[in-house]
Figure 1 (cartoon, helix red, strand yellow):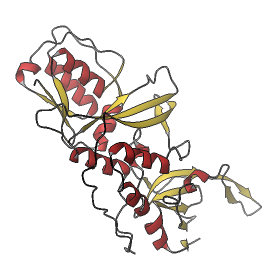
Figure 2 (cartoon, helix red, strand yellow; figure 1 turned 30 degrees about the horizontal axis):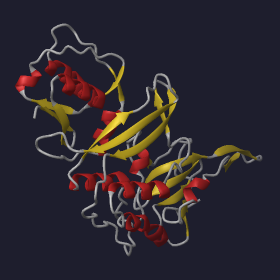
Figure 3 (cartoon, helix red, strand yellow; figure 1 turned 90 degrees about the vertical axis):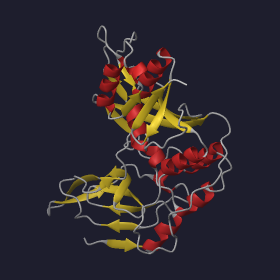
Figure 4 (cartoon, rainbow, N blue to C red; figure 1 turned 135 degrees about the horizontal axis):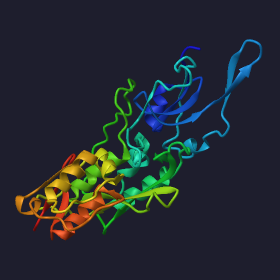
Length: 319
């Protein structure tokens, strides 16, 4: 079947965060202005008659995609030939796993509503009320060592952080060409946090070895860097939140050796002065630890502080 449009494609640009794509194997919740998917539901297929063709149906329809007026999809494209052997030819809208909910695209209407927020707490509340946990089980499941774990992500701010100036909406509601992707909530949030002079760090709240879920808290707080708050990417926050199976300290191991191992494990560079990097480390690291946890332990032992120095770089320094 060729591509079939229902309703005007213009509608999904103006009123909702997404559109739908139906293939022979999946129903996708697509990101507005792109050909990437946010969430999906697999179709259950079975042979139909002597022609040996397949009939697909959805066991549990994703009603949660349609609960919010500002975010619900209103356009669908049907292309049963887009997939081969049930394998999606589309890409997920983000490579993020633990922070996927915060990478949810924001529609024009929701963007306008968020722009009325007075502070960060109000912004988060408006987002939660609009999005909540309204995704499929597949969207919120993370596999660690082959074990399926549920992801619970939340944001917490220390104190009342006033929003000074909301960023200009990059979406033109009169754009009929769909040539610009809708912004994610995390991109809006990070911009406002930096503008307010704050920083953000991810913390793993539950040990995945003993639980069936991973709980991540993004803590917004005063910067702990002499150079003030620095921009960091959502991808770096994701890496810093993932548990690391590594560190066994050898005897007479200097701090720079541990930091190199930490950087190699997570792809996050760590800078510090010679008076810190040449210190011998007394702490012994074992088991499941995150980048954030190791940096907190090292900084505390050295009487230092750490924070982000750039998109994918951290800095340890003494005041």
